[in-house]
Length: 220
Length: 396
Image (cartoon, rainbow over the protein chains, first blue to last red):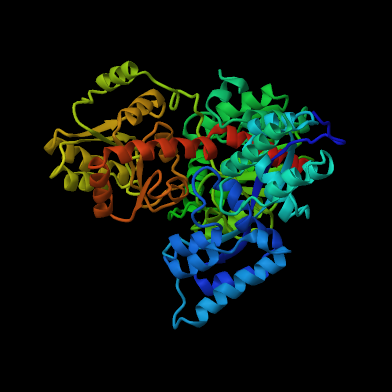
């Protein structure tokens, strides 16, 4: 079995949440605050959704869509926000622009401003990610498979979401390592194409494992 | 006492390893918690488990408590109530005594540390005597509706901290310092939450004189207007027309006149209907609460005003769907249609109870989903990762 030039170290993560003193009671306030919060807050409410909601549901896709659906009961805006795939945007500023435009266009069609129920304000937050290296590195595809199957789900988030969206490693760490250290470009391409947005972290893990199993079978 | 490896059987896979790796990054640092007492309440329950576990992980962790005289305790109770939104009279002399007692406490306590976390109101003014360490104020209640005068007095202390920690973002207030959000947690290995055999459950219910011959609706919580036990009685009466059920209300009234009125009304309701059981439990009745929640068919937490309300997480951990009020942390814990329902009215609660009683398979499905939700989000193991992340973040 081929050995990697550089070992792969799985990194889990813990999210320390910070409340910003920015709140929205209605959709216009949501739009205004969206324009002024730090980019890290846009990241937290879009990409961070996967880390916090990983076991239960990805029904809304991001916190803004969830708020529109659950607190404002504005299904139309919720649907428009929910389909925004944060991985489609080259930067968080582009993503922010898209979200603001969607809310703005929606409000332009209305003669009133939809408002959250009492107690249902949107509270903007951001997060500080603490990285947690998990054990010694792996150097073969079989070791990679074994490690991936057992790591905390936050490692899937870190390598497939955080690395791509906030750390600028657009392929994701799994695909990058398989391509550059293990010379498996086809497997890397297939992993890079996984639809992370429409899946929970456990589904992403299962999909990567399945692709790796196929590659291991081919190697035998 | 539970050890960190004991949590592997109940925590999500991999989480204990994350905790061990996080602890390696801050091994040897000193971490001090300060509270106003060592008994009762969710803070004490958490610290009783967290402090020795952090110590086992190599973090030099201590738990200090402040003392005082009756006047000091009366002032801190009134100040905390005012900061939580109630009207209270606070004289300048009483507030000066509060500050002075904290100054005296600071001399007696061992506060040399890398990170000091001061919990709630009683010890908060210790910050005026701060050491070199980083200090964080941990607020366990909803401070968003604090009385203006009380907050004006108290804010001067909070702003001297390096950070504040709230249970929910909406519980905070405008401050000059960073505000972090850490949900509280339950200890799955404590007397209140550990596994019980059906025989143990039956034995405890028998000792409480609660028969198990009918489906049980259970609400555990103080007999206060905020927790709305009378609303629960009314919801039960609407359901009782269709289902032969029993309602158990378990909690304490304390000595507040308003709560004693609530208790008297509940007793009157119980007197008129043998299927309404009102249990006054002592504060340390953890095992009884555990058994009641496990025996329940459905658990209610129909608060109209609530802090975080961890009773919902306790019940979900025992595999029970929870019907909760649309208040405080209940909205965070209960995922509507997945782990239970949040309701706005007596009628809403009755409707959801009937719906679930009529759909037993949904009770099982929601119960299982609730247990997994709590496993991921509200167990002590998640709280430990938050504490360690905070220690790393604030102390570098």
